Every structure is written in C-alpha cells, then in structure tokens.
Length: 153
Length: 284
Image 1 (cartoon, each protein chain N blue to C red):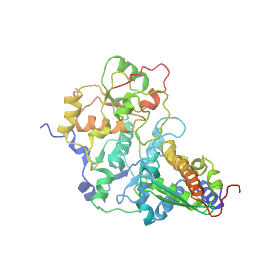
Image 2: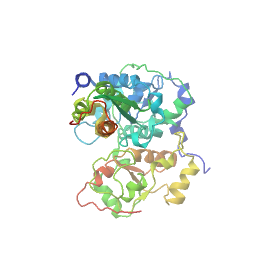
Image 3: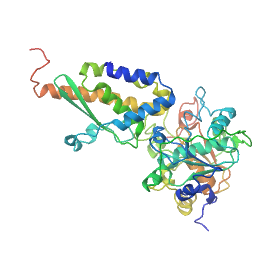
Image 4: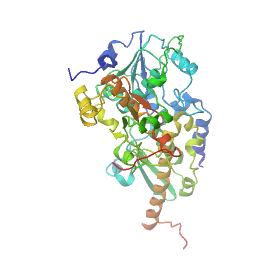
C-alpha cells in the first residue's frame, strides 16, 4: 500500500471514535472540486453503483501514475470522506499499487466500529469501483498509444 | 375531522423547535443514517444519538440494556420528564427508529420534528458545529412495556398463521422477492427473498412528502384504511429489513392515525429470510 494511504489508515486505526469521525469529516471537507473538463462526464459510466448517493470516480494516467478525481455530495459526508481518503492516499500511485490495496481497507481503518456493517458495504464498493476504473483507464491509455509503452517491445 | 392526526402534539414544527432551543425541559436529538451529518452541522443545542453505535448492543443483535440506555440519557442531559424531540435525515426515518427505541424503554414524552433535517436546512434555519455539554441527569428506566410495541419472531409466526394484519414497508421488488435489498443499498445477508405470507406491501415512503414532512391524516387514511383495509383497533405488525423503515410506519399508525395495537417487528427480513422453516410467499 502506498505510504501516504498507509499513514492515513494507521491514523484512523489508532484514533478513538470521535477522532475518527472528525478525521473522516476533515477529509470530506477537503475533497477538491471536480475539474471543469470532467463536470460534463458525470454519467452512469463513472457512477459508483453501490452508493446510494451520487458518487463519481475518474481516473487518468500521467505516464505510469494514476491521477484520481471524484465527486460526492457533502450531504453524504461519510462516503465523501472515504472517497477523499482514497484520492489523497492513492493519487500518483501506479496501477499495481492501487490494485494491491487490501479489499478490507474499510475494516483495517477501524471504520466498521463507528459505521456498522450496513454503512461499510457501500464504502467497500467505492474501492472496488476505483480498482475497476483504474484497470479500464489503464487499458484505454495503453490502446491510445502510450509514448512509453509498458508492453513488451 | 377526518384530516386531523390522532395525536397532533407528537409532531412539532421547526418553528416550535426554534422557540424551544433554550428550553431546559426540551432536548433535541439528531439520529441519522450517515452519522457524520451531525458533525457537519446540526440544530443548535442538539445531541446525537446513533441508532447503531448507541442504541444497539455491539455483541448480541438486540438493543442495549436498561442500564446502558439510562447512561445514554444521563450523558445527553435527558431526564425522565424531558421532552425529547427527534429529527434526522431520510424523512426522519432514523429519527423514528430512535423514537421507537426510546419508547421501548418507556420514555414518556417523545416527539418528532416534522420535515426533519432536510426541511430545517432547506429553510436556512440556524445550524452549528458546536457540540453542547449538558449536566448529566439521573435517569431511571421505568414504565417500559416493550411487548406493546415490539413483536418477536415466534409471535410473528402465530400472528401470520392467524391471518392478522401485517404490513411490509419495503420496496415492491423486495416484497415480491425479486431483490433482497432496496435499490442502491447493499445486500444485508438474507438467504431467501419474498415476504411473510399474508403481508400487504405499503412502502414506507408513501407516508412522507418530498419535503420530508408526513402526509396529511386524510392521505394516510386513504392508504392504510381505504386501500389496505386496516381499522384502528387492528393488531397490526409492520416490518422491513432491519426494523428501521418500519419504525416510521409504526409511528404513523400509532400516533398519526391512532392505532393503539400497532407493533414493529424489528427482526424483520434479515431474520425472517434466514429462519429455517419460516413460511415465505413470493410475487405480488
């Protein structure tokens, strides 16, 4: 797991209930707005289906580095906070690093304790969707003709 | 009059809450699906009571015991004679759940703020991020008669077999058995889909307006009496998936329409759909 994400997970895990809530809310408040060029693309193909709130994920590649963008309403602060954690912890990571993020990240962060199983499943869906998006974007990126192709020459 | 609630005082308006923000006899309680909403901003002076983290036992699938409930109230500055006003997200769905749990423990004076969190924020009323501190009270659980408003699985079976009324408040696809959960919500682990035989489907959302307020008494009667055929003396049981949506319907039947024998089956589909040998009906 990239060290940035590892540090956030460790901080969450070592916090008490109220500290975790505050931390998650800080992340929710800090989620940067979607760049203008992506605003027009908030459609079903970028929507996280597992979330009841409208959450959109976008992945672009800058060489081998993934650039992540997302939109989630502030009225759904828990999912917005979790999305913001993923963006902060994984922006600039490689596809291999993102795919290697443990599927039980939500549990490892101690969020099950404050959110309960019901609310945690939606968050796990965000991570699954992010991995699928990263894979899709990487394939599209390679097909479009990467100036430095990673495939065998 | 047909268009009056049976217990109109049970609903308070946002204006009423504004007038009682500093009333020491009143405590405003926020209960949400997303617990971070309270920290984002809340009604000034309100406290958060979470249905899952506070009111549910963390080991056994049940509510906390009387001692723990008393501690929650004491910490929130709620005394036995405090008027507790619940509000929350999702048209007060979770607020009604907390209301029902408070009634399980026999708390006397519970109300719901009509319109909930959404209407309060939509109307631009005052909010704060400040977490209030109240002097702890001495709270004693008394007058608790949970069997009057709660029904457990064994009795649900005899209730269904006797042909007594059951209202399934889940979405139509959950009722028919096509889906095991609401659209866009996670599957919560029921092994079989369908409904309790004899149950009638009245999705909980039919009781509320788009702005989060409850429908009028005439509109509610048209649904539950004209359409479904219930009458106030009926021993009606409401259920859903984990007992939360049905607590809103229970609230509507008990307080807005005046059905003294309405109960909530909180085991609901996550229990019934997993019970070995429990009878199930499928389809509309």
